[in-house]
Image (cartoon, rainbow, N blue to C red; front, side, top):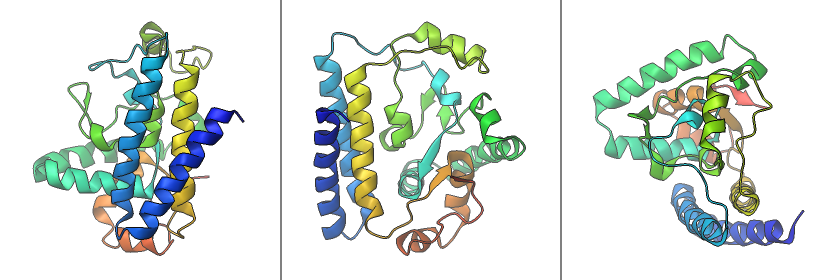
Length: 225
């Protein structure tokens, strides 16, 4: 484990643990963690001679298998409730349900090689970009052509889309730092399939209570083991 990984992970763990312990709402701590993440990654990219090929409108990665923690899904629900119309939420959930039906009919391994458009991808833009999960934030590529090739041939796991090493290290370290801080509180630390959790975050009336007490926040969502 590299020194920069340990340093970044420890720094985020200490800041998040303090904010979660003293705050009434862990979702506020998550939003602050996202802000620190964005600043950290922006600096890492600025310091790198290699730059990501990612840009607005390039959304090949938004068809990949995504997993998320309960606190991330709860923050997404909060964001959607404040910025989406009721009709728009229903449209998103309908698409998530269509995706979920496919996901439940295939194995996790098959899911890795199956393109499914994210229900929150609209006009090739992420409609919840400020609160997108760590898994989405952590992905970047240095080769847009390779991303397109991977999208067009999802069964070919040998296609390398490229990454900036320090950016990947900082991203993973920061993510693990926050998750370690959240886990020590006794809240639900399970990992969920994004589509099935997205449906249930809107349909499970006791989701927040279940999360805070460490129970499975989304009883019917697919839990990633």
